[in-house]
Amino acid sequence: MSATAPRATKAVIPAAGFATRFLPVTKAIPKELLPIVDKPVLQYIVEEAAAAGADDVTLVTAPGKDAMIDYFDARADLDNALKAKGKNEMLAKVKAPETIAEMTAIRQGGAKGLGHAVGRAASHVGDEPFAVLLGDEWCHLDDKLLPRMIDLQSETGGIVLALIEVPDDQVSRYGVAAVRGTDADDIVEVTGLVEKPAIEDAPSNLILIGRYVLPGSIFPVLEQTEPGSGGEIQLTDAMEAMRANGTPVHAVVFRGRRYDTGEPVAYLQTLVELASQRDDLPGFNAWLREFSATLD
Image (cartoon, rainbow, N blue to C red; front, side):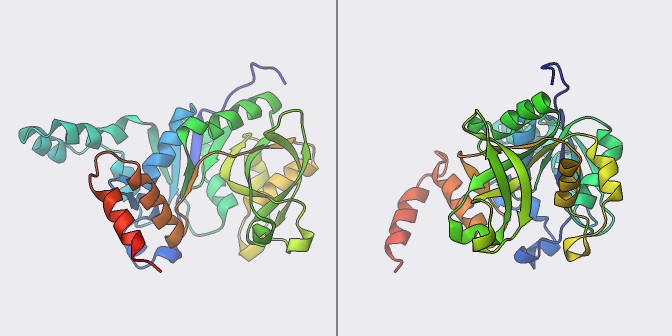
């Protein structure tokens, strides 16, 4: 494919789920807004998209989750209060989310699966390539996973996934890719996807993570995709249908820093790790060392 092929400049973040693992707090607070000290998970994800050039972001949301869009909007009363008190540094932090990306919200209209959620963004994305970033994980900006994926999609015109390696005894918990090597150490051709295989049936130890770069041609395929696992429209089924019809599917094998907030223990691990790296939380690491010494 020509090097002048269009690049993904739009991103879709599916964020309509109930987040049952975090109930009851997610009855009132979207999981995507859970804080990493003073910055919500969602901001990290939007920053990842924007840093890769995908700064036109569509949130696929649900009732009770309007706070996600509110977070990226200006709030004059708060701005004025901070100005009046001379809290300019805090004001800059409050204003920062307003300029990261152009934000749009679309209601999913029922929990009908990831494929359905992505399909709801069709009217905004059109026929352009676009990125999908799931709302409970992100990758360190310096490790440039998403830019690598967008470059690869522009070169191939097909589907680009992100994979990480896990121990063999963990593969049955994830979607696993069957792959064929390429000339690049971190890029593989995907020849099949298997959802939560038995250990002995797993085609590799490379599992899918929540980053995709897709051609706009996936939208009509999603419209025709029948409900699959769990009675939901699965993105994996649509991608497999496209692969079977000749769409190239590649993946970047990511070996960089990834932060997971999809379940409580992972969220706490991410929170503590990132808090420990901050210079503006004096005493936290000393306390953490003392507390760790009390654990069995």
